[in-house]
Length: 606
Image (cartoon, rainbow, N blue to C red; front, side, top):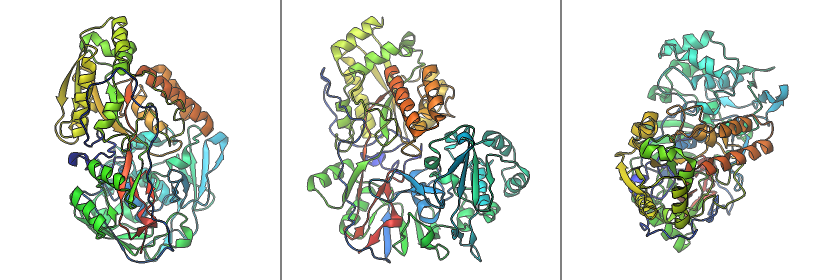
């Protein structure tokens, strides 16, 4: 799950996606639940307002000015694991595959450095990719990017420092020898000399140089219909040999990096500003996904949410870096039909309600599927949607996978429609009464608080007492509770909120299911916070991951989705829309879900 660029917004009360914390925002606090099924039926977005301002003849030149609250995690593509890091990497970095900049296709993986699709052989276990001629590093003199650079980049993802790529579980069992290579790498000294010495002699069989220096060969443990989509991750970016002189993810590395994208980092003042200017080594004819119209991209950090949006409206800024309009602002912009406001699906599940499937509380009542089904039947999703800003900003989702991910169920009817009377009967049939549940939430987030209060009110109607447990601070809910499996096992909490988005789109279902519902791997290695464990689901996940075709995989993911929902491992709430504002002189503002932002490399200014 790529760390969201919007995680700074929840404290300000914005109703926008934050994929590592419960969704944020403010609206009415909701009333009492009804017994009718008004919880919504869509697994995707029910509202889109797309404003790309793409008319007119594109112009070259000018300075694109954006502003936001904070910095990226790392300006090192092989270890960044944030949406903003991926946004920045698009500016200065090339990958084998990237996201299409064409409206309506922005979740599709298309060739970037690659000359075409992977050439698959060996029953789908070998994939050969050729790098375009003319993709160069801005070295002196400039030189061609090679397969050896790609191999070096992937090797660095699991370097022995504390700065590693956080999405390794996406591919650690797929690429031949990756796990054993990383285990050995972890024992190397976490120094420049230690890393260089290890890489000089280490053998990594998973990726090799093919028949030419520009041919990359991936060796896989099983067929992977999702390979091209997976390779959109910056982790698979090439890395020049010169960068081994600096530790991964450090300031020194940024100051001495080489670049193969259309821009270079001219200056960087951490948490204050970053300035991108044109890369003279970049050849536009080799780049099918970036036009690089503007001469410079200037990012100002440390700004406040309202101030940024006012500057965009006034035209002194072009768009934001990591601060979307607040829920109130977004609803006003919708009501005004503002031509410069863009609202599109985030393609995520954020937030969803987690059930602690191993809770010992109430004599282990939550360990029973029937009890979880009864609780789900007592909850009314529509009130939780209002807490998240209303259905235009936060459309309901009824399954694990949102629309935009292959395998998202076509049946949009929730398995357990809201029915208080039926919920009472289900609890009685399960032989439980007078349940007392602990709801872990973040009082710092208005939406998290309101959702806790609504669930507390709704469950009281069926005789369940819900007590709140506040996790203070921004990430305490994860670091102290959800990522520590013993807290679930000891009954520190019974219910909680979290959010999730894919590491890639289209064939990206495995980036939902393996981290969240694969019972063979527990937190902190996984994000199966409720310790859900069903061998039937695990088997479906294994089958879908190794499926030889995207169609076969999608059918299996849909079965896995149905199983998880029937088991009530989670209660999905919303696939929120992402709201972005741009100035009137900013054109071709194409929203890329992976970046949670516009594609700066294709914007032009009038």
